[in-house]
Amino acid sequence: MRRFIDLPPIWLVLFLALAWGQATYLSTDLNFGGAWSGFAGGVCVGGGLVLIAMAIREFRTHRTTVIPHREAERLIQSGIFKWSRNPIYLGDCLILLGCILKWNAVLSLPLVPILLWVLETRFVIPEENRLRRKFRAEFARYSLKTRRWF
Image 1 (cartoon, rainbow, N blue to C red):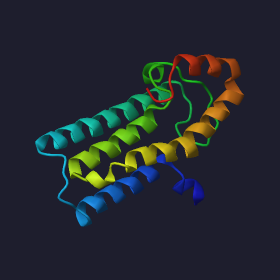
Image 2: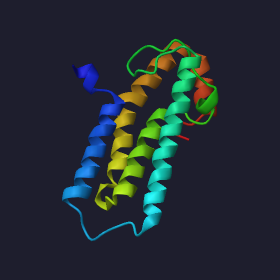
Image 3: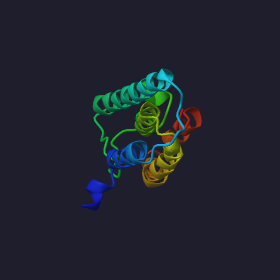
Image 4: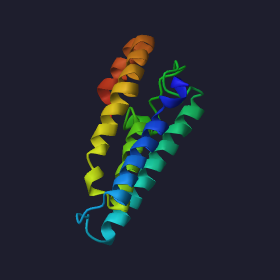
């Protein structure tokens, strides 16, 4: 049961629910001001979904697992992984930011860096440690040329 709960999409849904709840039940007179926030929110959500789709495509092309906490068969350095070592987690944060903008949930903005911290501590650091042990020099070179986020 813990493995099902400890997955990045579950964390994203939890944070989205918090932002939606704040927008719905704790709305304030604060707002992002006009239609631009809905447009920017849509761009962020769309960009996040594109990042995730591009990353999943690379995982499938290289026939390795996309599921956190599992051993990777290959170190992916192509496609979107040339620009970011963690495009799926970056996409999750963009989706949360986009929904916060679209829902006008100003008080929920701190949830974005909190989600980033949760993803980094629960998933990114352990994944990178496994990759570092398995691929050693190859991962060291990759981490020097490709940043963790973007």
